[in-house]
Length: 186
Image (cartoon, rainbow, N blue to C red; front, side, top):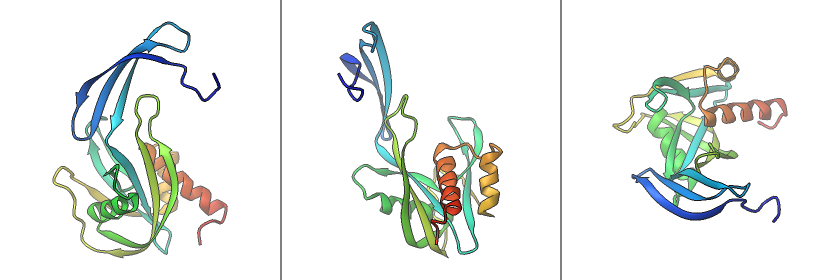
């Protein structure tokens, strides 16, 4: 066995919950130490997409909404899920327009991430959107969204002060800050 091999021996797997977005699978077998073990995995049926929109004056856009699982309001970059077979950029374009009313003429992937890999298989892609044009937002009927435009540095401070805790947003904002510090943004 190498360091990259799965140390778990799975004897059985059972779907315990399934809907349009997630599936919960219960696994039983032997843990890495050889004893009896269980593992629950939340399988995501969509790719997580994040978009950090940055205008020519170094402003960015946050979307605020009540997050049901956390039981609290959350400020985040525009985000959404795209079907696993869809081109991630198409999802990013749709989410940015839906949530903020923005369209972008320049798109770059800035990172890929495992969102919470201890219990889920959810992966994500974060885009930087630039050369922005304002249109009309088209939120889904399940969303009550609040949008605000802020200087990027203020948004970065929100991460430092724990006012933004959404994992995709934190990663994206810190990545943009790093790109700025290293002179990678033109």
